[in-house]
Amino acid sequence: MTALPQTTELLTSLDSGWLTITLDRPEARNALSEAMATDLITTLDWARENSVRGITLRANGPAFCAGGDLKAFAAALQGTPDREALVALNKSGAEIFHKVKTAPQTIIALIDGPALAGGMGLAACADIMIVTPNAKFALTETRLGIIPAQIAPHMVDRLGSIKTKRLMLTGAKFDGTGAHEMGLADYIVPDLNAGITLESELRAQVLECAPHANAAVKELINDAAELEREAFTHAAAERFADCLISAEGKEGVTAFMQKRKPDWAPQADEEQDR
Image 1: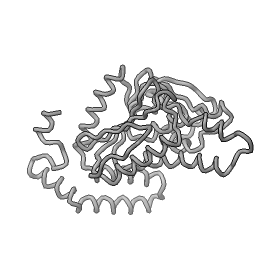
Image 2: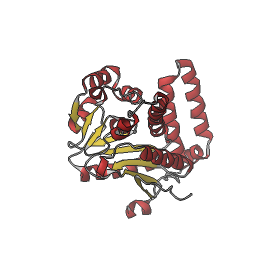
Image 3: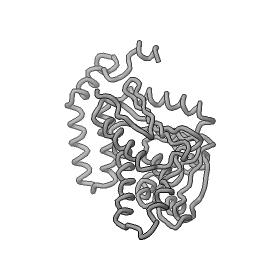
Image 4: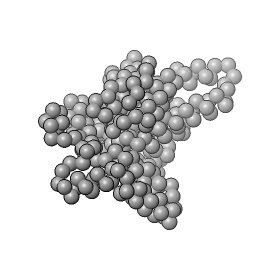
């Protein structure tokens, strides 16, 4: 495994194959600057190429992420705006969301504080979202005369088109309880400490699962939304066969028959240490 990449607006740490990414622009409410976007893309690419089993997204400061960097947007409007540059800027946001959504690792987002606009989109791309009642959500773009362009497909994937349309057309604001009730968040916990405890429990569950099988599951679910039935059936069957005949599949079946844990799962002494 190579060393973690150097980042300027993220903090990263690796523990037993689990990567924690902490957004670290607390003075700007962790708004998605160009530097932070580059850091995220670089770190997620690194995780894809190394033996990372799972990823947790967190944030320093009172906000998870306030969305796009409005100061950068305002600067881009000075003089005669460069439309093509703005198109490129918006498309870079799509790359971040795509990297999170399609990462082979299981990604957990832990939200305690505002996750607005692009911050809400970033959280929605995670596989599992934990929130506290202190979490705050809103798709605020239309209140500013713009649109949540690259966020839209991921919000629809999480909530469906009807709920997503309502949130976007009204700029509705809601807290962690509301997020859980509407199905945006998977879990609600009383406070951040409880969220950290739950994240640790979920991490342990994920580590019991085979890493390549989990990656294949994520690909399978993405295919289910994009492929026609016959194409999906064939792609799913091919992935099943590939998993079964892989070293991981052989180890999993053999471990079951031998009544032991497979080699990717934490063993008894490791569990005691945790």
